[in-house]
Length: 74
Image (cartoon, rainbow, N blue to C red):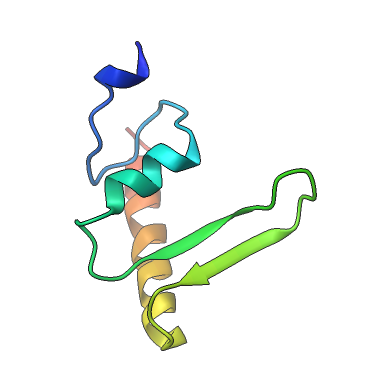
């Protein structure tokens, strides 16, 4: 499937997408965002959050964990 036919949605996909496409899909949709990843070529962990309240970032991370765990059986 070509990338131009990929539909961004709020569910986990089994297709590998470039980080730029994921971030682009969130723009204008999300009121808050947490970004996790690996720094290219370094393997270091990257964390960024739009809200300075880390308890809110943790809430999003825990919600993401729940969503991912529920979909792992699919």
